[in-house]
Length: 545
Image (cartoon, rainbow, N blue to C red):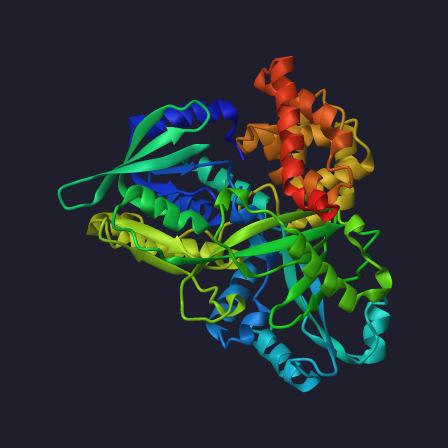
């Protein structure tokens, strides 16, 4: 990509936000906001986007990090959801091969379980059929003995057998950034740490401008536009009450908690689906860690302070003990935890797990469109459907002008499947162009494709992959703080036993150099990082009380 998306660009974008009039103003910089921004920009719209905190800092970086059809939705007979998701899974595997990776899943089945081998077999056939038999691999049936051979750490007692099927895992936060970068190439005006705090309405009660506050400086200003969109996820009701006196709550927020482990402590050849009680918990091996989750409980607390609690951790450890008793996993083995809030739309479901994951797109009497609910996997489709709704409120000429969706094009032209087919060759070439080890070069190529060559050229003089990552994040993802880097640009907090302590001096030096920090500012940033880590892992202190 040619355009930067840096802290310096943020200052330029901030000025544009208050001086120009936009076709579309988006509030919320998670995956849905980024997806609509890209769709609208590719159609030729003049688009503004603001995010109250860092991009992807809410639900969009707290998911199970899966791109999947949703095997569990078959139980609720939500076949249309599964079909949509499987179709989008295929597209995302092509659109972002550096962010979305095929993964094999195994479902063990036990005597006395909710589902037997025959019923699950029908479900597997339905899953493949809804994917139009175009999955990376079709499902397979495994006997009890074959299942234990496949996953040696699995509980063998009362095991009937199991099934394997294909889905994918992804880097949820980076998918947001790549989507925003793609929109930025088409002149998106965007800024993080800018919060919507009020609305100006015309005589018809329609919103014509949003009052915003720069959370970095405290400055308040107005953003003018022809149409306004909320993609703030679980903050929908909070924003609604802030803007309108007559707002009626729309959401049933639920909390989802995940734990992470090292690959060495929790060895798995594939993902394992643990159908605990009425909810499903995944064990997901990734290139850098294993993720266990999620929980699904109603949440009524502070949306900005959601954390894993001791009871959440206890529940997930209990599921692990049930399915992998031989591993003897304890709380001391946990590397990190993270928690997010799902923005589920209110319905008549009696339990959290039964509440539909289907999204809704509505426009209210104030002329504001809202996206609520939905699955990460279908974000591209949700964006297209949102644009179709938004265009209903534009003149016929604009509907024709902006009518064609173009989001099936790759997110980053420098990352294609061909890059990964020639990874060994590119690794050797990158080594020659840099002073990095073969392992570091391969990691950069896997994460950034051929853009890794641009990184070593643009930031010549850096000596490690993590320094290149930091420089790249600052320059291309509007990364303003070390904590934002650790939590959403690279998995240092989630995957490293020391939560990235070994890399901190190098990372801090890059940030200080690129952002012209004083030593005192750098020290303040480091302290803020550790305070954030301690806050995320507060349950570890409570455990000993």
